[in-house]
Structures are given as structure tokens and as C-alpha cells.
Image (cartoon, rainbow, N blue to C red; front, side, top):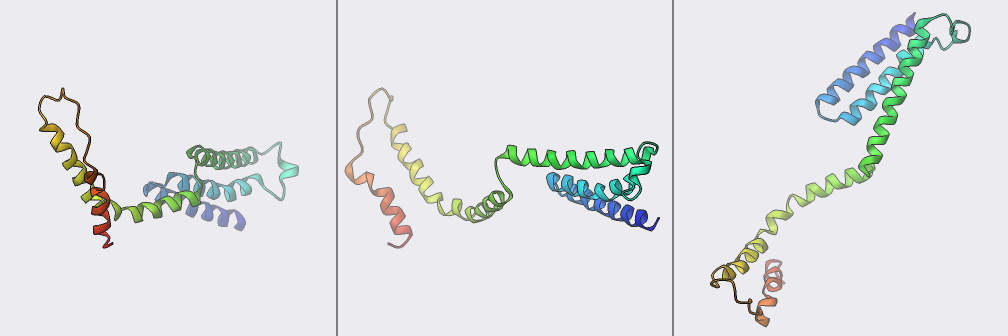
Length: 154
């Protein structure tokens, strides 16, 4: 009786944590937590100690096995979704860290975007557009590289 109460309380707490995790939009983690939370109740309902003698006559035992099957399906579903995404937890963590580092990058690369826009402006002023565009002067090829080197103080 005491073991059932403790396992029920642990399961209820685990399902509450899963609900909070799902509220934070971390659905794979929430599903995995829910699966872990269902295991104690499933084990209690199966009657681990007396399950051999009572397995055929207790519907609660079959419900316990059903809950264990649901927990197993939840585990396997989260694994399949993880594999389908093609990344592991470590790779996703590294990608998030790279995104945080790259958040500074676009602000620093904005001057090169303006030079790219300036390169297309003479073409728009070039007239009807039927004439082939003239080759760039040799000095223009290195202007972008010079701008990058100046920006970094080299």
C-alpha cells in the first residue's frame, strides 16, 4: 500500500514536470519525462512481486502492462524523431553555441553587403542593358580584400 502511494506520487510529480517542459516548447524532452513518469505506476499496477499468480485474473495487471507499453512507445517515438532529424544531442548543442557566436557575425559583415550593393549600382545606370558589361578593372578585383584587411587593421 505504501509503495503504491509513493510510486503514484512520483508519477504525478513526473507528469507535472513533463507538462511544464511541454509548456516551454520542449516536446521531445517532455515526452521522455512523461515516459519515465509512467514507469513507476506501470510497475505498481503490474504487481511485480505477485504478478506470476495474478496475471490472468487482474485487469489492473494488464493495464500496467499497457502503461509500460505506452512508455516504451514514447521512448521509441522520441528516438525515431531524433534520428530523423539527423543530429545528436551533442550536435544540436554545438549548433546552438555556434548560433550564439554567429549572432555577432552578421553585424560585422554588413559593410561587405553595402559594397556588394554598390557594385550593382553602375550596372543599373549603364543604359538599356543590351550591351555586354565591360570587364572590371584589375584594381577593382582587390578592393573587397583591401576593405576586409583594413577593417581588421592589417
